[in-house]
Amino acid sequence: AIFTDMMAYSLVIPVLPSYAMSLGADRVTIGVIFGAFSVALLACSIPAGLLSDRTGRRPIMVLGMLALAAASVAFALSANVAVLVAARLVQGASGAATWSAGLALLADTYGPGERGAKLGLALSVMSIGMLLGPVFGGVVYDHLGYAPTFVLPAAIACAIGLAFAVSRPGSARSPEGRGATFSNGGTAPHKGDAGYL
Image (cartoon, rainbow, N blue to C red; front, side, top):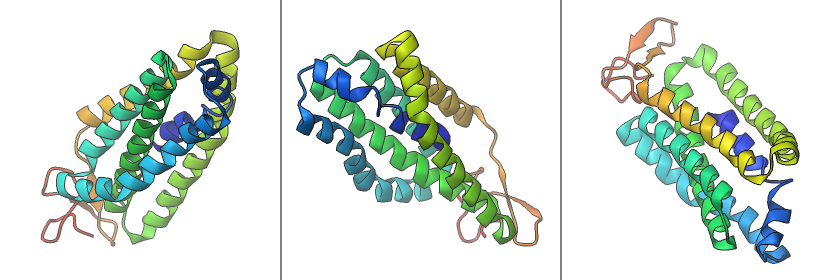
């Protein structure tokens, strides 16, 4: 999920400027389109984290992935600059949901002996997605055109969101390495739950 989010974030780099200019955007507007992601990410990260504490991680992961899919479809179908800005805002909000709930889910699931390695792996995958996104975007854009560049990541994000939706609740590992099933159905553990770390 984190890889897909970062790939979708960065694949616009070789594609979006020329397309936005074809819709009448100037350089300042292109900067606004790119910056809209960070604005939404900043505004939504804390609320997404708080919401994942209340509702559990899985619903927020599902919401984040489906929002990313919707943003990618909006990019594919956009016919004016306003839609591009709106899609980038939704993309930033989906990133806030995915990163907040995803990293918290790892922290919930693994004990102190494994948590650092798993979080490090997640951050490494994030960087790989950032690096491969522009390459993916450029190759698909050259061979298939503008719309497929965004339809493909939309399909991937939708599939991941549905996988989270239908997946069975997992279990947390205690600091001693023993499995501890969450008493609240596989969501974030709370004090008093068997899975609270």
